[in-house]
Length: 297
Image (cartoon, rainbow, N blue to C red; front, side, top):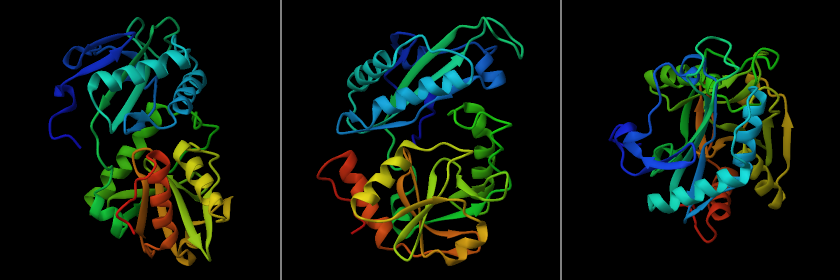
């Protein structure tokens, strides 16, 4: 993470159709997205000057906004083009890309039917989400107090800012105990995901992962499933009970920020950093940047 506060970084931000200086990309304190979490966002990575699966991310941004009841006034193609232009303008090859859309400050209250829909894109240098040395040893996860909500109570198919409040609380609580992250269960008590990444387990050479019925079916998650099947590894998507973790041999997280990260411990359960997570770390590295190999071998 950057040692300089994010509002003090250099460069430009694409803001409602214009490139503005980083320090000038400001909104009013009475912005609906700040008070009522009426905002959706994406997280993307650029490798070697190319943003991985950019259009899939932009399409999901539009769909997230639709679920929250607003329309982004820029097309998928226009947003893709803005991301590519900004990456070049920032002069970065390997970077993190953050588009965000939100309701503005025209109305302040639960109802905000007439608020402008704003869109901004920021790109910055952001290395591995987890410490590289920890990744190779396997990170340690706590089991979170808060659970992913019933989809009848929250728009779980949207990458909505408000859904991440319990993720922040859970990650902070885990870090306070010396863990790197936290595993979240769903409202039924089943295994769901980590605070910002999907989860996979290995048993007898088969990958097991929860059905994403109350959390995002991540773009990286789908990529990892495809990579595993290319190798002939069976992938089973199913309901997973917490007590099953005792029988799993290996575990890893995956996400745009996390990429593929082995897990060595979740609460009382321990896992080997075995062959399948290491293979998929390398396969993912080659998928996003052909020819690259991780230090995991």
